[in-house]
Length: 327
Image (cartoon, rainbow, N blue to C red; front, side, top):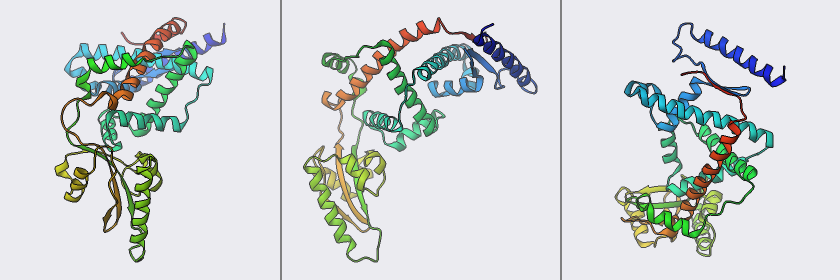
């Protein structure tokens, strides 16, 4: 008997013991029983239900009460996804694919930029899906691992042509409607020593120097991360989109006088100095192609990766021992 066969028998034995133990004082459906075996690994009902909530946005118990057939269909589809993830993870470990924290940070920043989200808006959406920030980071990391895995296995470069981007834009213009309001980023230099009479003048000079750098081509997000003491500093100063009427009159006036893409003069406040970058002045209609070209490129890249990954994983599945433990 092979080592793998022994391991599988052990997993099945443990599976049976776990199900028997779970049945004491709880129904089989509500207990955290095992629902699938993948080689030497297992998937639990708790894990499946958590993924169902994440992917559907609906609590599995509520979905089951609402429509048993929809619940069964979603459960099977998402369990297949978890099985595929397990198979891919085994391959990722075998090959030694690594994704660094900085790569995850960069990917999340791109996601926020593409969707015009602040971190607080993203966190709010994650909360609705039952995801913590760390769980979301892990999901992004696994996506990056999958991208590297596809590149490694397929060994061919994915090319997205300009005409594909333009065709997608024309076919999906409804996705690129401007949201109402203005979109801004900020650098805030906080006054930290109220007793220091010379500090305000020093902050004004620092603000003027930063504005000069920005107008000479320095990257706003980089300077915000380095110098800002205000909200959104870690996100490159990005604050999000606002109804102009919700902003204080002084800030509203600055935005009106600053062109889209431009940077304001330093704004002197009692507690410091503020610099504003106007990212988008709102209005209605579809955003121009150049504003969304990078986002469309990443959408098309993701679709091609998913297509190649699905084809590759199906072949690998045929060679993998899997067992689903419910009808």
